[in-house]
Length: 196
Image (cartoon, rainbow, N blue to C red; front, top):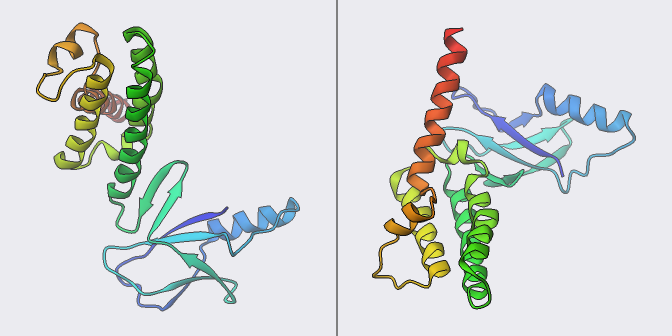
């Protein structure tokens, strides 16, 4: 499946936009290497500040289907470049993992459950964190609540019990702490790259 992201400038008033040179080069490469582009499966989103009612064409005769959201390498991109679509997808995955942890808690020890938590839950949380960690506090809180639910499932705690001591004792990083450390590392690399 070919995914296309097309950025529209504010001055674009056309009803029809042709594919940019990168897309044309990609399609030429496919043809040279004996592959063909299936326009029925090709999707695009058009990134713009305002709502534009335009279609994306290739060679002025083949219309490429326009999507509001596009799944690209496991990350959901929308037309406004917001993180809501990806976070909704992430919440679904994490809820499934919490269900698995609750089920496995009947049969496994804490150490195995913590390994399962790190291997599945935290893997999904860390994937693409560089893009979604800048989301608003409400969305970040949604993920943090799920993290606490997973910890409670591992240690068979009630909702009234706090997870604070468990995070400390088992040296588990919280979602807000993970965000801060990720941003600190990013700042360090930006600062050292720019100054050198």
